[in-house]
Image: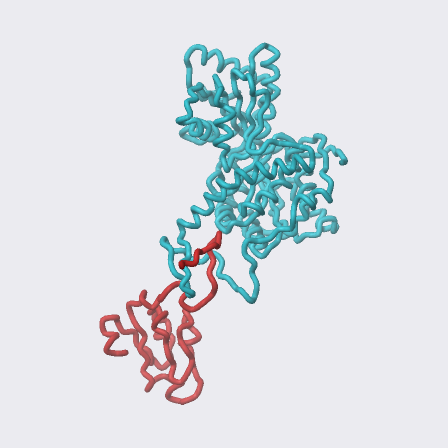
Length: 99
Length: 400
């Protein structure tokens, strides 16, 4: 049975995916070259400017760095900020072969 | 219960104290009034245990009220004319958030050109913000209506404007019976917000809402923008019963009945029904008495709740009216008085075919005396006898 929204004003609980799978808004997809990414090259937690600057919090600061494409809107800020220029924004028609 | 001689603003301040308001926000300079000054003094002296938040504009005032009400505080503010207009955007936010904020509007004209004097253009212009609007005819009604307003607001989860005429009531002294504090406590239970916020159950309040319903992260179908608009409209329509019930309960507890949605004066056998809002309706009762002494059977309907509009009550009150004369202190430019338009709409399809004459009166503080209202009614009755069904007249105004 459908659960009815009984809120009399608009609200939601902060949760991943609350606004839907916003990754489908994306035209350009960030693709990371781990041969250039500082954290991967040094094999220790380092740099992570992509994680710091991502406005949607979809970058996971690990080794290697990973981006949650279910929610990445493709703004390109990570690619712009990356000091090693390890991130390339790839238009959607070419994404499948990169993934 | 003690009777004191109070201005309308003092009466409103006494009510705020009796209702144990917890947060007052104000921009206490023109166009505010002495009401917020009394509250500031009481809070400073510890007579009223509340936070007084001074901000730089009325827009911010209502923002503070929205925030404080959201986290469960009983809040109050008051303003006038341009202050209310500046608040306009946040009035929508308060209503859309379904917060039971009570605001006194001390009715004054709006510029250009500058006026500090009374009319009701300021609050009538906020008609479609989703706020309940109650109007008072004297200072006793101000103190009683503010107390009722918190009950209504917190039951219907809608904000309420308590409107009263600037200077005519706000700065005029009259005897006011102060309700007993214990009895007010019994009448007004503590405020319980519709949503309890806590660290355990965090909420995003008022996120972007898309046109359609959608599923949230838990798979629950959440309302879209239109569903929330409908819920607000449904709440305002339902507030009609709340206003009537609260008035009845108040009358039982305190012995004063101010009418639910509207009040009547000598209406039973009236051959002409005068309709008004606020102090001009009060003045019209004197005009009706003058006319009755001459043998003209005049009655008065005073609108107490302008939103929700008393559609059913108006239909009942005016169903036998041979002639209707409406006095109002606002103008919907390019049409007619806002009240006149609403009354005609309420009567549509009911079979009431009475002529309706509309008088725009008292704009920007122009004085209106009871004898002048009586003159206007006499003139309308003469015209109606001559077949004039509709008329818009600017009372005491040079229009040539």
